[in-house]
Image (cartoon, rainbow, N blue to C red; front, top):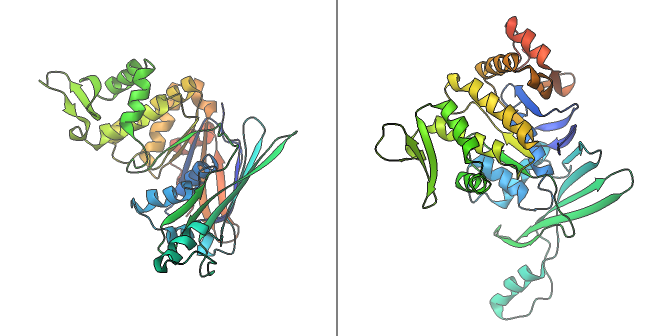
Length: 361
């Protein structure tokens, strides 16, 4: 399994410092509001997108649901919006290598911007006045016992906030690919995910899981770039958008779980849009497909019913019990951000005795 064993976060979004150890195949983050659950998913996503300077901007677009999130929103990546303190994310991979990322805002002279500004009066560019921090730098490195390689990607904007220069990291090939499913399914092209699976003759895998979700489902197809579901005794196929949010959410997660092209699956608010009766079916699909595609999964939730359904599923499938870790995230008054780890035994005992795991009082 290509993934992560642990992670350490410094000065990223609402987290000043937090370290989590002992990740397994499926890892669940719970906690009160603003405890850092979504931030954990974003940190892992950025670690797998370090070479692409657009990744941090995309994170803000997911947060704001704004396709045109301005560059100034980059400030939200910095703890307490203090741009003088660089966010850092460090993680040890399952293969023993360590990757680390440091983000900073700085000023970089951009000849293209200077040429555009001076071109207004027909004069050639001579200099550019340093008036604001116009560049986000992503400095990162991959280190193993015998090798350490450093890279940099960057994003530069003009004074209107328009991107004038983006520089992906050169000579770097990302080996760990993540898919991020936000609470409202932003950031994924479901038709593309399904097309990849159908091309790989994996349609039966998807149909099996859909039938388990709703036994009336007979088929799923992509017609004119739209997804259609065939139901038993319904005269024609229905667009997925007409079938309800729950089915769409379930199909998105199943498709991303089944796709062998990604190594990491990140799911925010996994219970969003789903009836509680579907939770156990979804957990079984996630574990089964994560094992068959050899991927690692990170999930955020605040639903007590979701955790009880997870426990019920694991009680029925003992082979998955060792593959699960649950972390309660909390911002404590004395120790700051902390993560409290539970294995299956801890989850089972808490469910049996009705112990609250989602946050500390």
